Image 1 (cartoon, rainbow, N blue to C red):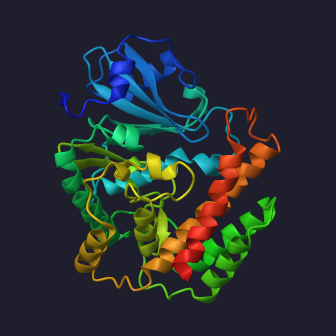
Image 2 (image 1 turned 90 degrees about the horizontal axis):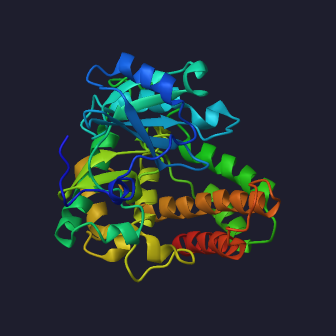
Length: 359
C-alpha cells in the first residue's frame, strides 16, 4: 500500500521506530488470529496505538511485508459491553461497505475474550489524514478543502439514501420517534448530573419538547458525523470512521450536528472550541452551501434545521455536564489534567447556543 506524501499522517512520523507492544494487545494470540483471518498477512506484526482513552482503542497492525491493518477494541477496564459493542460496530461497517459510503474493508470479528481479553475487529488501513482539529487541519492543503467539504455533504446524502433493509441493518434500532426518545434520554441525563443551575438548559429542553417537528421518514443516522471522523486524502473523503453511535432515526439530526461542527474562524461555540474546529482554518464550503446541496440531493425540507442544531447543542450540553460531574466527584480518576472551569463554561455555552437557535 503506497502512501502519498501529501496524505502521510503525523502518526507515521512519530511512530517510525518499533515500540513496545501497547496495552490492550496480546501480541502472540492476536498475531495468530490475524494469520488465520487475513490471507496476505506476513508475521511478525508490529502494533502501535493510533487513538484511545475512554472510548474504543484503535491500533495499527503492520506486518513484515509492510501491509497495514487497523484493530478496534473496547477501552481497558471497560464495564459495559453495550457501551463498546464491537460486534455491532463491525456489523455496521461491514454493512456500509455494501453501499456507496466509503468505509474501510473489514477482515473479521473476534468475540472470544481468550484471544485478547475483549472482543475486537480488524479493518484495512486507509491512508490519509484525520483532521481532528485546526492544528492537524492546517495540514490539509488549502486547495483541497472546498472539494473535501463537498464530498462530506455528498456522502451524507448517500448515507441517508441507503435502505437499511437492503444492507442488512433494518433491525439496528427503532426508526420512529427519534427526537422524542433522544429528548427523554438526555433530559434524564441532565437531571441526574446537574450540579449548578443553567436556566437556558431548562428552557431549551422545554422548547425542544414543545416545538418538536414531525419526523419525515427514517434513515441510517451516523450519530457523530463531523470532519474529525473522516480520513481525507487528495481532496476527497477516503473513509468515514467511528460508527459506534450509529442507529436508525431522523436523518436531520446528522445534518444539524454536522452544521454545528462546521465552524468558521470567527465562531466560538465553547471556550477554545472555535480554535480547534478543523474547518476553522478556512477554505471549506459555507453552511448554506451544504444545506442547499443536501436539500437538492435528498429532497428533504430543511425548514426546521435550526431546531436540529439547537437539539444538538442541548444534547452535547447534557453529555458535557455528565462528564463534568464525574470528574467533579472523582469518578474519572485524577482530574488534575481536566480544566473543570472550562468544562463548566462549555456546558453553559452549549445551552446558550441552543437558546439562540430557538429564539
